[in-house]
Length: 254
Length: 254
Image 1 (spheres, rainbow over the protein chains, first blue to last red):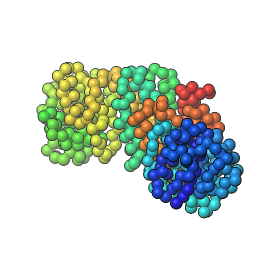
Image 2: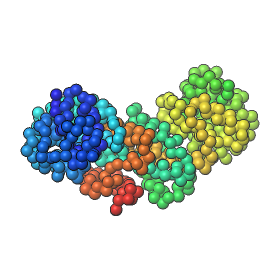
Image 3: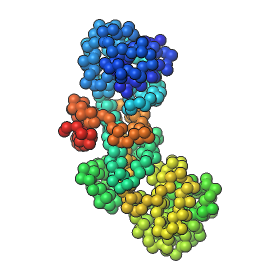
Image 4: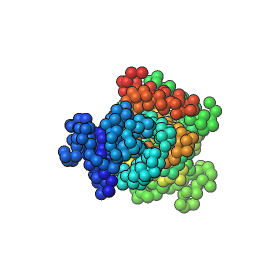
């Protein structure tokens, strides 16, 4: 049985709490947050606390707070004996070095407010400096997920950049698609099966293999027609830039 | 019972053929293609034909050929009495006007070679000029899908542009994510749950609501750190452009 204390009240903290509560191999000893209201998701009020001066003893302390608060909040854990980990993809191990034993416990997923996620298929990226801490984090990760991988800070930073492209920037492509639909009174929901299949293709194909569309085919006529449809200056710029990039990548003449 | 002739041997033709073969409301009378080899997917050789001079009688003729071949191939159907439709998102009804009765039967989905797709959730966008032809197309569409919508040529063109953003350009974001992973020896498969969840979020949120990430938060430190990780000039440009666009859209100061 691994005992944990969760620090934070955001989407990651809530999802970790719910997942650990279901596990018979993990005991949540405490959930600490600044704001009592935001701790409402914790089933027992005995578990929740706003007091950083009364931290329960535990094997692992999970800092699930926003990136810019990590360093500051970590200062409260200078004297604890347990392992202090943060859950950020973009923050180094350095940021929490004030603690005695430190590590990373980074679930590679996007979390939505109020939506409880099944951790089973979510990769958990771990890092720490001591062999026995690594074993502990691995064990903790495996109570949630089938995929627990050791990733060092450099790789994690890189992975986070890749995640921005496939998640944040992809969502921005959805945003433009929705804007174009709205402008022309088309129901954006009609595009959803396409969006899901675009993601599902990666089960069997690399993105290079999965690429389709007028730019890939070098179909100048359609590219030209599309630019006539797009009125927004920014959307036109993006359309041209991305089409040219795809053409270039797939060896079509510009 | 609606009788159809399919013209073409590509992904769309193959998927339509497989789907109609399963339906008890549709009889596939013939599949016509230029190349006998490419017609191998047709179960019965009696059905397949390379001869455009011997076209079977049918209610609907479905031109599932590449966009630039539509006009040319349509010329073979000048004298038929059935309804000639094409399956292209980017091509107007005009392109097949040589036929007596014309229409559009556009399944809004991305098709992959060798992958049979379930049409059930795929929107089928139809268009035609005569009331009775519309009824026929609607009926035909409903043998495959729960979502058959009447969309005129202008809307279809716009929808196709939106589809390029959410499908082709999204896939390009995946491509860059994969490149970054490969360059740093990270398994791209680790990002797949994130990719799927990014798409799945749209079940409950608009893309505007679903946006997350450093640009959305206006987190300059992370944006700066990421730009230090990205070495490729083109990737840096795209990272900056899209981050600024997201910041602007979500009202963060540039």
